Image (cartoon, rainbow, N blue to C red; front, side, top):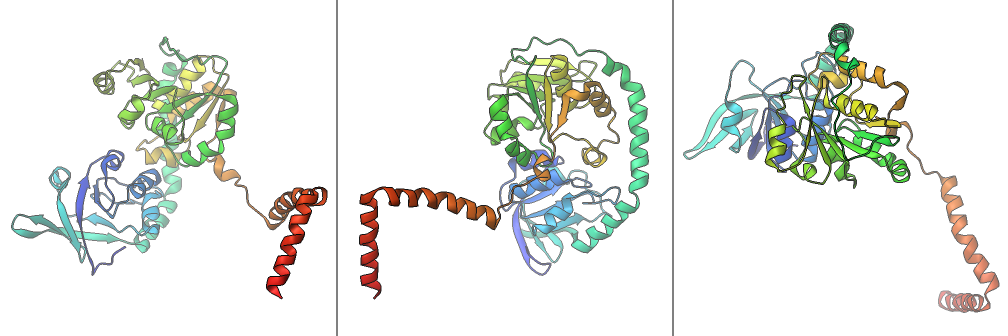
Length: 384
């Protein structure tokens, strides 16, 4: 981390979508984003990419709800800056992407052919500022929750008929009937939860469904997804080409922005028009194809999750989970429930378990006993 009196010179990587930026962000680059209320997953992606500093055109934390991203970045020593809120820069993202800049004394300089040019003042974001916003967010939490519930119920009433109908029948090659299905979303603790569920996956060999970036999460954990479901906005080409069956989630009216990308890769695919989020559709697909059990990892299940996704309610998720009922098990955060801890007593038992067979061999085998006696005599001669 560098202080306000020190300078930082680096190349900027800029994008309005943080998750897209993190795919091409190189270590020690400065990230320029336009992301109000940076969420924990975005912060984790920036940290994994090795970001040097982050400049945000929007507030890292508005105080509307307790977003975790800024705190996570500051705890890891990443300097955070917000752009001068008095100025408007509609094309700044496009202009600065790939540019060499310097931050000095909370001022941003752009490197040009004629030298350094002052670009604008930045506002340094520190722990105290985030703590104040954190308190504000908690003070407003009841009002935020009330609006969230109202929005959820209003949309649930409007959309319930859509979810009562069955999905379009797809001729899937992957058999889901009477099998366990694991639906993986790239949400909080997905890595730890996948690791915790590794014995279950080895024993039951469930159908693995990656929802967009969840397909990459499966590959990173050493698994190949059987199905990839989503609007194809965050999954990599590598995951799409891994051999999994691809289901493109389309709007209820049939519009499918992600279809063109899959077609350009030359892949076979299905189009599934449906309301709700892609993770909702993945669960419904497993349910309507008679899956015996549906286990979800990293899915969005609460108000903070949905606010971080920019959604004001969770009507579709409420309806889908109500419809699936007892077939659904949410494993999100299961790794946080129990983590085995080593104790001195356990170490003692392990040591005893190793020593007993050795002593038994020495007691029974005369050659081994003679060798130990010779070593003992050699040691006494050397020591005394």
